Image (cartoon, rainbow, N blue to C red; front, side, top):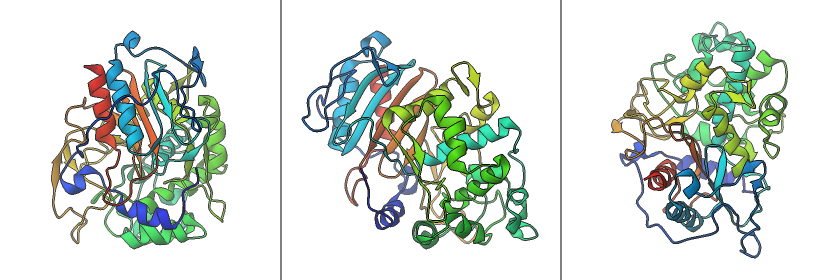
Length: 392
Protein backbone atom coordinates (compact mmCIF):
# COMPACT_ATOMS: atom_id res chain seq x y z
CA UNK A 1 0.00 0.00 0.00
CA UNK A 2 1.39 3.35 -0.97
CA UNK A 3 -0.23 6.35 0.66
CA UNK A 4 0.17 9.75 -1.02
CA UNK A 5 2.60 12.14 0.62
CA UNK A 6 3.43 14.75 1.69
CA UNK A 7 -0.02 16.09 0.75
CA UNK A 8 -1.81 13.34 2.69
CA UNK A 9 0.62 13.57 5.57
CA UNK A 10 0.29 17.31 5.78
CA UNK A 11 -3.49 17.19 5.85
CA UNK A 12 -3.78 13.94 7.73
CA UNK A 13 -1.31 14.60 10.48
CA UNK A 14 -2.87 18.00 10.94
CA UNK A 15 -6.12 16.27 11.80
CA UNK A 16 -4.52 13.90 14.29
CA UNK A 17 -6.04 14.42 17.71
CA UNK A 18 -6.58 12.22 20.72
CA UNK A 19 -9.74 12.28 22.74
CA UNK A 20 -8.24 14.71 25.22
CA UNK A 21 -8.34 17.45 22.63
CA UNK A 22 -12.12 17.35 22.36
CA UNK A 23 -12.92 16.30 25.90
CA UNK A 24 -14.22 12.90 24.75
CA UNK A 25 -12.36 9.66 25.27
CA UNK A 26 -14.02 7.70 22.46
CA UNK A 27 -16.26 7.77 19.42
CA UNK A 28 -19.23 5.46 19.73
CA UNK A 29 -19.85 3.00 16.90
CA UNK A 30 -21.91 -0.10 16.36
CA UNK A 31 -20.12 -3.41 16.20
CA UNK A 32 -20.67 -5.45 13.07
CA UNK A 33 -20.87 -9.21 12.76
CA UNK A 34 -18.18 -11.76 12.00
CA UNK A 35 -15.59 -10.71 9.43
CA UNK A 36 -13.37 -13.73 9.15
CA UNK A 37 -12.01 -16.86 10.78
CA UNK A 38 -10.40 -16.79 14.18
CA UNK A 39 -6.83 -17.98 13.91
CA UNK A 40 -6.83 -17.50 10.17
CA UNK A 41 -6.84 -14.72 7.62
CA UNK A 42 -8.87 -13.54 4.67
CA UNK A 43 -7.33 -13.84 1.22
CA UNK A 44 -6.86 -10.26 0.05
CA UNK A 45 -8.06 -10.91 -3.48
CA UNK A 46 -10.82 -13.48 -3.11
CA UNK A 47 -11.97 -12.88 0.47
CA UNK A 48 -11.60 -16.59 1.26
CA UNK A 49 -10.34 -17.90 4.60
CA UNK A 50 -6.67 -18.85 4.43
CA UNK A 51 -5.78 -22.39 5.45
CA UNK A 52 -5.39 -22.76 9.18
CA UNK A 53 -2.01 -23.84 10.42
CA UNK A 54 -0.32 -24.45 13.73
CA UNK A 55 1.88 -21.40 13.28
CA UNK A 56 1.67 -18.13 11.35
CA UNK A 57 4.90 -16.24 10.74
CA UNK A 58 6.39 -17.69 13.89
CA UNK A 59 3.32 -17.08 16.06
CA UNK A 60 1.73 -20.28 17.44
CA UNK A 61 -2.02 -20.33 16.76
CA UNK A 62 -4.63 -21.03 19.46
CA UNK A 63 -8.38 -20.57 19.71
CA UNK A 64 -9.68 -17.65 21.78
CA UNK A 65 -11.55 -20.00 24.11
CA UNK A 66 -8.39 -21.95 24.87
CA UNK A 67 -6.75 -18.75 26.09
CA UNK A 68 -9.72 -17.42 28.01
CA UNK A 69 -11.06 -15.00 25.42
CA UNK A 70 -14.58 -14.71 24.08
CA UNK A 71 -14.61 -15.81 20.46
CA UNK A 72 -17.59 -13.67 19.55
CA UNK A 73 -15.95 -10.52 20.95
CA UNK A 74 -12.80 -11.17 18.94
CA UNK A 75 -14.84 -11.68 15.77
CA UNK A 76 -16.91 -8.56 16.41
CA UNK A 77 -13.71 -6.59 16.89
CA UNK A 78 -12.48 -7.81 13.52
CA UNK A 79 -15.80 -6.91 11.88
CA UNK A 80 -15.59 -3.37 13.20
CA UNK A 81 -11.97 -3.10 12.07
CA UNK A 82 -12.97 -4.18 8.57
CA UNK A 83 -15.82 -1.68 8.47
CA UNK A 84 -13.36 1.09 9.32
CA UNK A 85 -11.06 0.37 6.36
CA UNK A 86 -8.48 -1.70 8.19
CA UNK A 87 -5.94 -3.65 6.19
CA UNK A 88 -5.08 -5.99 9.04
CA UNK A 89 -6.35 -6.83 12.51
CA UNK A 90 -4.93 -9.30 15.03
CA UNK A 91 -5.50 -10.38 18.61
CA UNK A 92 -2.74 -12.18 20.47
CA UNK A 93 -2.50 -13.53 24.01
CA UNK A 94 0.32 -15.14 25.96
CA UNK A 95 2.51 -15.31 22.88
CA UNK A 96 -0.15 -16.95 20.71
CA UNK A 97 -2.18 -15.69 17.78
CA UNK A 98 -5.87 -16.12 18.50
CA UNK A 99 -7.30 -14.13 15.60
CA UNK A 100 -5.89 -12.54 12.45
CA UNK A 101 -7.54 -10.90 9.44
CA UNK A 102 -6.11 -9.23 6.35
CA UNK A 103 -8.03 -7.15 3.81
CA UNK A 104 -6.87 -5.48 0.58
CA UNK A 105 -3.25 -6.43 1.24
CA UNK A 106 -1.52 -9.74 1.98
CA UNK A 107 -0.28 -10.09 5.56
CA UNK A 108 3.37 -9.92 4.52
CA UNK A 109 3.18 -6.55 2.74
CA UNK A 110 4.60 -3.70 4.85
CA UNK A 111 2.56 -0.54 5.20
CA UNK A 112 3.16 2.88 6.71
CA UNK A 113 2.17 3.13 10.36
CA UNK A 114 2.92 6.80 10.97
CA UNK A 115 3.48 7.64 14.65
CA UNK A 116 3.68 4.04 15.81
CA UNK A 117 7.23 4.81 14.70
CA UNK A 118 7.71 6.96 17.78
CA UNK A 119 7.42 3.94 20.09
CA UNK A 120 10.03 2.13 18.00
CA UNK A 121 12.29 5.16 18.33
CA UNK A 122 11.81 5.09 22.10
CA UNK A 123 12.89 1.45 22.05
CA UNK A 124 16.04 2.32 20.09
CA UNK A 125 16.89 4.93 22.71
CA UNK A 126 16.38 2.29 25.40
CA UNK A 127 18.76 -0.08 23.61
CA UNK A 128 21.38 2.65 23.37
CA UNK A 129 20.94 3.37 27.09
CA UNK A 130 21.49 -0.29 27.93
CA UNK A 131 24.57 -0.33 25.70
CA UNK A 132 25.97 2.61 27.66
CA UNK A 133 26.02 4.85 24.60
CA UNK A 134 23.83 7.53 26.15
CA UNK A 135 21.86 8.44 29.27
CA UNK A 136 18.37 9.85 29.51
CA UNK A 137 19.53 12.92 31.41
CA UNK A 138 22.28 13.73 28.92
CA UNK A 139 21.81 17.17 27.37
CA UNK A 140 20.90 16.76 23.73
CA UNK A 141 23.64 19.30 23.02
CA UNK A 142 26.14 16.55 23.89
CA UNK A 143 25.20 14.96 20.56
CA UNK A 144 23.88 18.01 18.67
CA UNK A 145 26.58 20.68 18.79
CA UNK A 146 24.31 23.29 17.17
CA UNK A 147 22.46 23.57 20.48
CA UNK A 148 25.50 24.44 22.57
CA UNK A 149 25.48 27.91 24.03
CA UNK A 150 21.83 28.62 23.13
CA UNK A 151 18.48 28.30 24.93
CA UNK A 152 18.15 24.63 23.91
CA UNK A 153 21.43 23.64 25.57
CA UNK A 154 19.71 22.18 28.66
CA UNK A 155 17.09 20.10 26.81
CA UNK A 156 17.68 16.45 27.69
CA UNK A 157 17.09 13.19 25.89
CA UNK A 158 14.38 12.50 28.48
CA UNK A 159 12.62 15.74 27.48
CA UNK A 160 12.49 14.61 23.86
CA UNK A 161 11.04 11.23 24.88
CA UNK A 162 8.43 12.88 27.13
CA UNK A 163 7.45 15.59 24.61
CA UNK A 164 8.08 18.34 27.15
CA UNK A 165 11.25 19.69 25.54
CA UNK A 166 9.79 23.17 25.00
CA UNK A 167 11.07 23.19 21.41
CA UNK A 168 9.23 25.32 18.88
CA UNK A 169 5.93 23.91 17.61
CA UNK A 170 3.27 25.15 15.23
CA UNK A 171 0.86 23.44 12.85
CA UNK A 172 2.65 24.88 9.84
CA UNK A 173 6.07 23.85 11.10
CA UNK A 174 5.22 20.37 12.32
CA UNK A 175 2.77 19.22 9.66
CA UNK A 176 3.96 21.00 6.53
CA UNK A 177 7.46 22.48 6.65
CA UNK A 178 9.02 19.52 8.48
CA UNK A 179 7.53 17.04 6.02
CA UNK A 180 8.64 19.08 3.00
CA UNK A 181 12.24 19.56 4.17
CA UNK A 182 14.99 17.83 2.23
CA UNK A 183 16.65 16.99 5.56
CA UNK A 184 14.02 16.71 8.25
CA UNK A 185 16.78 16.42 10.82
CA UNK A 186 18.45 19.67 9.78
CA UNK A 187 15.10 21.42 9.82
CA UNK A 188 14.21 20.07 13.27
CA UNK A 189 17.57 20.95 14.78
CA UNK A 190 17.39 24.51 13.43
CA UNK A 191 14.10 25.43 15.09
CA UNK A 192 14.25 27.76 18.12
CA UNK A 193 13.40 27.08 21.74
CA UNK A 194 9.84 28.17 22.54
CA UNK A 195 9.46 27.35 26.26
CA UNK A 196 11.75 26.31 29.08
CA UNK A 197 12.49 22.56 29.01
CA UNK A 198 9.97 20.62 31.08
CA UNK A 199 7.51 23.53 31.36
CA UNK A 200 5.09 22.67 28.55
CA UNK A 201 3.91 19.61 26.63
CA UNK A 202 3.44 19.39 22.87
CA UNK A 203 3.07 16.49 20.45
CA UNK A 204 6.17 17.73 18.70
CA UNK A 205 7.25 15.78 15.63
CA UNK A 206 10.21 18.04 14.95
CA UNK A 207 11.53 17.67 18.48
CA UNK A 208 11.28 13.88 18.23
CA UNK A 209 13.14 13.94 14.92
CA UNK A 210 16.13 15.36 16.82
CA UNK A 211 16.51 11.87 18.32
CA UNK A 212 17.81 10.82 14.89
CA UNK A 213 21.14 12.68 15.19
CA UNK A 214 21.29 11.84 18.90
CA UNK A 215 21.09 8.11 18.15
CA UNK A 216 23.45 8.32 15.20
CA UNK A 217 26.10 10.20 17.16
CA UNK A 218 25.71 8.02 20.26
CA UNK A 219 25.74 4.64 18.49
CA UNK A 220 28.07 5.47 15.62
CA UNK A 221 25.73 4.16 12.92
CA UNK A 222 22.74 5.35 10.89
CA UNK A 223 19.44 4.87 12.69
CA UNK A 224 17.96 2.63 9.98
CA UNK A 225 20.92 0.26 10.30
CA UNK A 226 20.89 0.41 14.11
CA UNK A 227 17.19 -0.44 14.11
CA UNK A 228 17.69 -3.35 11.74
CA UNK A 229 20.66 -4.87 13.55
CA UNK A 230 19.70 -4.23 17.17
CA UNK A 231 15.90 -4.42 17.12
CA UNK A 232 14.25 -5.79 14.00
CA UNK A 233 16.56 -8.75 13.44
CA UNK A 234 16.66 -9.90 17.10
CA UNK A 235 12.85 -9.67 17.34
CA UNK A 236 12.26 -11.33 13.98
CA UNK A 237 10.65 -8.18 12.54
CA UNK A 238 11.75 -9.19 9.04
CA UNK A 239 9.17 -7.02 7.28
CA UNK A 240 9.96 -3.78 9.12
CA UNK A 241 12.13 -0.87 7.97
CA UNK A 242 12.52 2.90 8.25
CA UNK A 243 11.95 5.21 5.34
CA UNK A 244 14.54 7.94 4.81
CA UNK A 245 14.31 11.45 3.39
CA UNK A 246 16.35 12.81 0.43
CA UNK A 247 19.21 13.53 2.84
CA UNK A 248 19.15 9.86 3.92
CA UNK A 249 17.93 10.72 7.42
CA UNK A 250 15.61 8.13 8.94
CA UNK A 251 12.20 9.61 9.76
CA UNK A 252 12.05 8.64 13.44
CA UNK A 253 8.77 10.41 14.18
CA UNK A 254 6.67 8.66 11.54
CA UNK A 255 8.75 6.66 9.02
CA UNK A 256 8.27 2.99 9.93
CA UNK A 257 6.84 0.49 7.47
CA UNK A 258 5.70 -2.79 9.02
CA UNK A 259 2.91 -5.36 9.31
CA UNK A 260 0.42 -6.39 12.00
CA UNK A 261 2.34 -9.49 13.04
CA UNK A 262 5.72 -7.74 12.89
CA UNK A 263 4.71 -4.84 15.12
CA UNK A 264 3.17 -7.30 17.59
CA UNK A 265 6.72 -8.48 18.23
CA UNK A 266 7.52 -5.04 19.60
CA UNK A 267 4.62 -5.39 22.01
CA UNK A 268 5.88 -8.80 23.09
CA UNK A 269 9.29 -7.30 23.86
CA UNK A 270 7.62 -4.98 26.37
CA UNK A 271 5.45 -7.78 27.77
CA UNK A 272 8.68 -9.69 28.36
CA UNK A 273 10.16 -6.64 30.12
CA UNK A 274 12.88 -6.06 27.55
CA UNK A 275 13.90 -9.63 26.78
CA UNK A 276 13.68 -11.55 23.53
CA UNK A 277 14.42 -15.26 23.44
CA UNK A 278 16.02 -15.03 26.89
CA UNK A 279 18.35 -12.22 25.79
CA UNK A 280 17.86 -8.81 27.34
CA UNK A 281 18.01 -5.86 24.95
CA UNK A 282 16.17 -3.33 27.15
CA UNK A 283 16.67 -2.74 30.84
CA UNK A 284 13.57 -3.63 32.84
CA UNK A 285 13.80 -0.19 34.45
CA UNK A 286 13.55 1.45 31.04
CA UNK A 287 10.46 -0.59 30.18
CA UNK A 288 8.81 0.51 33.44
CA UNK A 289 9.57 4.15 32.74
CA UNK A 290 8.54 3.98 29.08
CA UNK A 291 5.16 2.29 29.48
CA UNK A 292 4.53 1.89 33.21
CA UNK A 293 4.05 5.44 34.38
CA UNK A 294 3.49 8.97 33.10
CA UNK A 295 6.70 10.66 32.01
CA UNK A 296 5.49 14.22 32.55
CA UNK A 297 3.12 16.09 34.83
CA UNK A 298 1.60 17.73 31.78
CA UNK A 299 0.07 14.56 30.30
CA UNK A 300 -0.88 11.50 32.35
CA UNK A 301 -1.45 9.56 29.13
CA UNK A 302 2.15 9.78 27.93
CA UNK A 303 5.21 7.68 28.73
CA UNK A 304 8.37 7.66 26.63
CA UNK A 305 6.78 8.03 23.17
CA UNK A 306 4.12 5.49 24.19
CA UNK A 307 0.50 6.29 25.07
CA UNK A 308 -0.81 5.18 28.47
CA UNK A 309 -4.20 4.64 30.08
CA UNK A 310 -3.24 6.46 33.26
CA UNK A 311 -5.85 8.86 34.69
CA UNK A 312 -5.08 12.53 35.10
CA UNK A 313 -4.44 15.56 32.93
CA UNK A 314 -4.81 14.59 29.26
CA UNK A 315 -3.36 16.29 26.20
CA UNK A 316 -4.06 15.79 22.53
CA UNK A 317 -1.89 16.39 19.50
CA UNK A 318 -3.26 19.77 18.45
CA UNK A 319 -4.79 21.25 21.61
CA UNK A 320 -4.88 25.08 21.58
CA UNK A 321 -2.52 26.55 24.17
CA UNK A 322 -1.81 29.90 25.77
CA UNK A 323 1.36 31.96 25.59
CA UNK A 324 3.03 29.67 28.16
CA UNK A 325 2.13 26.51 26.25
CA UNK A 326 -0.63 25.48 28.67
CA UNK A 327 -3.97 24.14 27.39
CA UNK A 328 -6.78 26.65 27.01
CA UNK A 329 -9.31 23.95 27.90
CA UNK A 330 -7.74 21.55 30.42
CA UNK A 331 -9.11 18.01 30.31
CA UNK A 332 -8.75 15.28 32.90
CA UNK A 333 -9.72 11.67 32.57
CA UNK A 334 -8.49 8.49 30.95
CA UNK A 335 -8.16 7.42 27.33
CA UNK A 336 -10.21 4.24 27.93
CA UNK A 337 -11.90 4.36 31.37
CA UNK A 338 -13.23 0.80 31.11
CA UNK A 339 -9.79 -0.69 30.43
CA UNK A 340 -7.06 -1.45 33.00
CA UNK A 341 -4.87 1.50 33.94
CA UNK A 342 -1.70 -0.34 32.96
CA UNK A 343 -2.72 -0.76 29.30
CA UNK A 344 -0.39 1.06 26.91
CA UNK A 345 -0.22 1.58 23.17
CA UNK A 346 1.80 2.67 20.18
CA UNK A 347 -0.51 4.89 18.12
CA UNK A 348 -0.28 6.30 14.61
CA UNK A 349 -2.37 8.65 12.53
CA UNK A 350 -5.50 7.16 11.01
CA UNK A 351 -6.07 4.50 13.63
CA UNK A 352 -2.80 2.57 13.57
CA UNK A 353 -2.81 0.80 16.95
CA UNK A 354 -0.67 -1.64 18.90
CA UNK A 355 -2.49 -1.99 22.22
CA UNK A 356 -0.85 -4.00 25.00
CA UNK A 357 -2.34 -5.24 28.28
CA UNK A 358 0.52 -6.42 30.50
CA UNK A 359 -1.70 -7.89 33.21
CA UNK A 360 -3.30 -10.43 30.85
CA UNK A 361 -0.52 -10.47 28.22
CA UNK A 362 -3.04 -9.61 25.52
CA UNK A 363 -2.46 -7.46 22.43
CA UNK A 364 -4.80 -5.93 19.87
CA UNK A 365 -3.27 -4.71 16.60
CA UNK A 366 -5.04 -2.73 13.90
CA UNK A 367 -3.47 -1.12 10.81
CA UNK A 368 -5.36 0.48 7.97
CA UNK A 369 -6.34 3.40 5.82
CA UNK A 370 -6.72 6.74 7.58
CA UNK A 371 -10.29 7.95 7.96
CA UNK A 372 -11.24 11.02 5.99
CA UNK A 373 -12.37 14.18 7.73
CA UNK A 374 -15.73 13.64 9.40
CA UNK A 375 -15.57 9.85 9.16
CA UNK A 376 -15.34 7.38 12.04
CA UNK A 377 -11.76 6.56 12.97
CA UNK A 378 -10.15 3.69 14.78
CA UNK A 379 -8.09 4.43 17.90
CA UNK A 380 -7.03 3.60 21.44
CA UNK A 381 -10.55 3.33 22.87
CA UNK A 382 -11.81 0.99 20.13
CA UNK A 383 -8.90 -1.39 20.57
CA UNK A 384 -9.37 -1.24 24.35
CA UNK A 385 -13.04 -2.13 23.90
CA UNK A 386 -12.09 -5.27 21.97
CA UNK A 387 -9.76 -6.15 24.84
CA UNK A 388 -12.27 -5.63 27.64
CA UNK A 389 -15.14 -7.39 25.86
CA UNK A 390 -12.98 -10.37 24.94
CA UNK A 391 -11.74 -10.73 28.52
CA UNK A 392 -15.12 -10.56 30.27
